[in-house]
Every structure is written in structure tokens, then in C-alpha cells.
Image 1 (tube, rainbow, N blue to C red):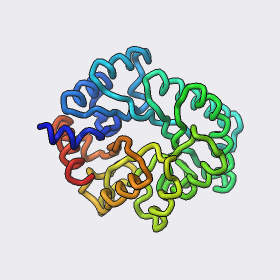
Image 2: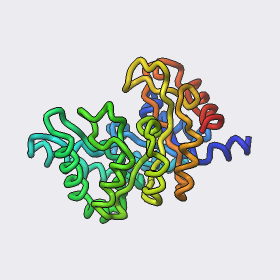
Image 3: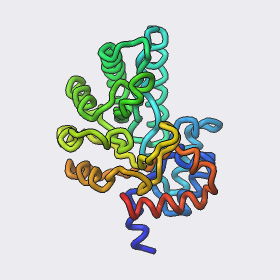
Image 4: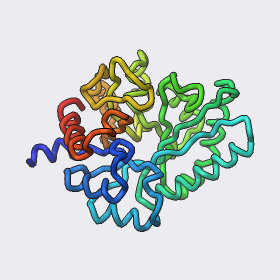
Length: 274
């Protein structure tokens, strides 16, 4: 039992992964199952005060690893861009209140905005948040998304592009969250992870199934697909990263199963394939 607990010591699970459970239930189930880290999606904070959510985490011995998600900076409408900044400031406030050290940014894209302009808006949006992030001590974690999402979710699609952004912004409050689902295909990944170095603040794991039936909601458990997760983890850890390994799985198939059994399978997959 102690060996299993040691193997799980850096395991965190996102609430979206086990979306069958509300926040109090997830806290109880994670704690009972030996999971000590939680990536919190913002909708799981709804319905109670932030203080109550923090108490739930503390009472179950859980650590808020990340708050998901901010971003969505891109729009042809300046009113919407301002609304996004206001919402991101609220997101940072929420992260600080529940003890999450970082807000994960899905940076945004819009079909009517050319990619060059989209990346300019993203840079400006993150820059506008740095002072607020610094005051709270919360990191803005850029999450590169797979190029198939470049039309409407994120114009930041590689770790290299995230590095360019971080170089330009030049702030210790801006980092990168590396999700293997989005970056595993990149031939420059190892080199760009080395370049990111200590700016890597998050590492997300799942797997890419073949065939993939739904490009959003058919991710696999680790070991169900073609991603060499241990190799990518070794590259990330070669930079000095010793943070949490966050399981983030969107899966209609797994969401339809018994969540207790699913949690057991997540832990088994984590031990064997991460």
C-alpha cells in the first residue's frame, strides 16, 4: 500500500475528468482514493462561496493544483475582448482564493481573426493581466492546443509559440502548461521543452486513441493510445520540473461508466503508463 501511495504522490486529477461527480463528491472520492492533487474547473466552484470550496479542499487534505480555465482573448469585437480581460481577473481572484498556484489559459481564436492578429491579441491580453497576477501570486499558464483547434479555441499551438510569447512578455508570472494530447506530435518538442526550461509550470496527461471518434471528447486513458507519455515526461523533468502530473481526460465513453471504477482505472493507468 505504501508503494502505491508513493507512486500516486504526484498524481492530480482534473474535475472535468471525473465530471460525473460534483465538487464535494470529487473531494471525498479523491481523498479516499489516495489522490492528493486536484485541477479545478471553474464550474465546479459554482453554488458555494470560494471560502467553502477552500475549506472542502483543506478538510480532505487536497491541494488545488490549477484552476481551469482563463484565456479566450481573441475577438473582432473590442467589447468582448474587454469582457474576457475582466473575466480573467475574476479567474485569478478565484485561483488565489482556493489556493491554486496557476490559471490555465486557453488563449482563444476566432475564424474571422487572422492567426497573426489573434496572436497579437493574445499577447496583449496576457500582458494586461500580469500586474494583477503578480499582486495575487498566481501564474498565467499558457496551454498550447493542438493545431486542429487553431480556428476557434487557440492560436497558440506549439510549445515553441508559447516560448515566443513568454520571451516577449518576459515575466516570471507567465509560464507554460504542457498537455501531451496537444503537443505529442511536434518534431521540435524536446528542443522546445528544453527552451521553456523552468517556465514549465504544468504537465497534463491522457492519450490519443486510434481511431479517434471525437476530437474533443474521445481522449483515452494513459496507455490506451499512441502517445509516448514516459518519454515526454522525461523531457519535461529534465528541465527541473517536479510538479504534479495532471490527468485531464474528456471522454464520453469514460463518463458513461461507473465513476468509482473509472477512478481505479485512472490510478492504474497512471502507475503503469506515466
